[in-house]
Amino acid sequence: MASLLLRQSLTKTKPTAIIRRFSTAAALASPTEYEEPTGITMKGVKIPGRPLYLDMQATTPVDPRVLDSMLPFYLSRYGNPHSRTHLYGWESETAVETARAQVAALIGASPKEIVFTSGATESNNISVKGVMHFYKEKKRHVITTQTEHKCVLDSCRHLQQEGFEVTYLPVGSDGLVDLDRLRKEIRPDTGLVSIMAVNNEIGVVQPVEEIGKICKEFNVPFHTDAAQALGKIKVDVEKWNVSLMSLSGHKIYGPKGIGALYMRRRPRIRVEPQMNGGGQERGIRSGTVPTPLVVGMGTACELAMKEMEYDEKRIKGLQERLLNGIREKIDGVVVNGSMDRRYVGNLNLSFAYVEGESLLMGLKEVAVSSGSACTSASLEPSYVLRALGVDEDMAHTSIRFGIGRFTTEEEIDKAVELTVKQVEKLREMSPLYEMVKEGIDIKQIQWAQH
Amino acid sequence: MAASGVAAPTRTEVLQLYRSLLRVAREFCDYNIREYTKRRTIDAFRDNKNLTDPSQLSAAFSDGKAQLEVAKRQTLVYSLYAPKVKSIMDIKPS
Image (tube, rainbow over all chains, first blue to last red; front, side, top):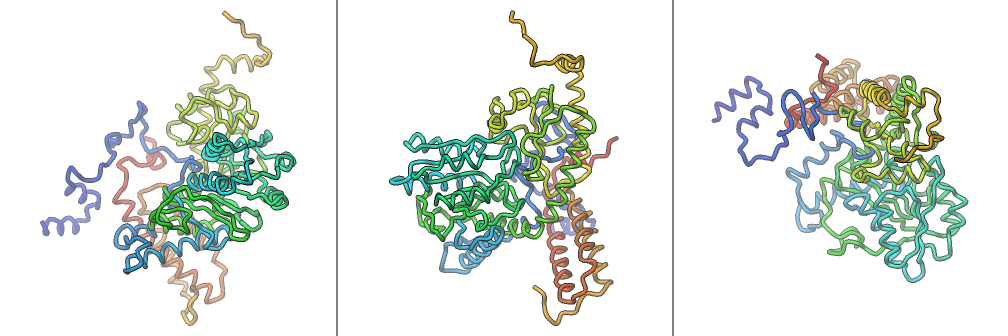
C-alpha cells in the first residue's frame, strides 16, 4: 500500500486520480450523474461546458482568499466560540471578534454594534418585526417601498396581520423613492422606515443620505437592507444616519449562511429577539456563532475594503462594454431603472418584441436570471418591474446581467454575442415584430375576438 | 505591517515574486479565478511601480509573498475538487 502511494506520488499523478482510486461508495455524494466528459445534460438541455456566470446579484463565488481563511476553522480550530474554559473556545472567540471588527470597519461602525445572523433575510426579520414588537405600545406604523426584498415585504404583511399599519411607498419610473412623499407619510406613531440601499433586481441606488436626514428630523428609526450595497458602494452608517442595517455574506464573495445586523448604540435602538436561547450575540440572536462562516465574512469584508475602488472601475468598464455591445447590434433595448443612480454591476435589460422565457431557454450557456432569484419560481412578472410602471410584455422579457470581480472581458463579449444571436432569432420568428417593421403601431390594434 | 529595519526588496526579488504569482495563477483549474489572479497581479505590480519609500516597498512585498502562499494552497484545493466538465470559456471551439 505504501509503495503504491509512493510510486503514484513519484510519477506525479493528479491528486484527484489518487483520491478517486481509494474512495469508497460511501464517499461524499459527488453530483456527477449529469456531468460527462462531453458536456453537461440537465433538464433536457445539453451544453458542452459549465455556463459563464453573470448572476452576481443572486450569489457570488467564494473568493479563494476567503476560503483560505475559513479552512483552518473546519480542520483543526473547530471550537465553539462560547466555550470559555479551553484553547479551542478562546481561539474561536478571538477569530469571531477579529471578524466582527473587519465587518464594522467596512461600514464605519464600532464592533460592539454588529450582531451576526444567518443572513440578510434573518437580519431583515429581526429589524422589521423586532423593532415594531418592542415599541408596539406607542408605535403602530411602518413605512417601506414597493420594491423592497420579499423578506421585508413579507415581514410587513405579517405585521399587518397583527394589526400594525404599513405604507408601501410607490417609486418613480426610474426606481427612486419620492422624498416629499416620504416626508408626508411620516406620522407621530411611525416606528420604522425601511428602504433598501441598492435594489437587487434593477440595481438602483436609493438616496439614502437624504432619507437618513428626513428620518433624523422626525426622529424615526431608519432601517436599510444593504445586502447588495456592502462592499460595492461606500457605506457609512454615520453619514446615512441608519439605526439598523442588514448585511449579507454571500453577496460579497463570502460564504452562504452568514449575515450581520448593524444596530446603533447612540441613540440606542432596541429590538425583540426572534431567536431565543442562551443569550449569545448580546441576547439579540441566540445560537452558536458559526466560526468558519463568520471568519469568511470578515475576510470578505476586509478584501472588499481593499478592492472596492479597483473592482468598481473595472466593473464600470465591463457594464459599458456589455450595454454598448448589445445596443450596437440590436434596437428596442430598454434599461430598467435609473441609469445615473445605479450600481455598476447590475444591468437589467428588457428586449422589445421578444418573449422572456424563450430568451432564457436559448441563453443556456450564460447564467443570467430574469427578475430575482426569489421570484423566478412564479409565472408573474417581477413586482419590482411592475412598481416601476413597466408594461407587462416588457416586464416579461427582462434579463438581469450581474457583473462581478471575477468577470472577464471575454465573458462579456461572449454574452453579448449569445444574447444578440438569440434575440435576433426570436425576432425573426415573431409576427409582432414583422408588423412593427411594416410600421403598424401594435398598441392601436383592435384584436378581433373569436 | 511595515517592519522597521527590514530592507526593501531588490529588483530581482520583486521580479521573482511577479513571475511566481503568474506561474501559480496558471495552475488554477477554474477559469474565472485563474484570469483574476493573472490580472490582479499585473495591475497590482503596475500600480506599485513608482513606490520609493523603503517601508512601503517592504510592506507591499510581504503582502505579495503572503498572497503567493494563499494562492499556492488554493490551487491545490481547487484542483482536488475540480468539476469534471470545464467552464465553457475554457473549451476551444472545435
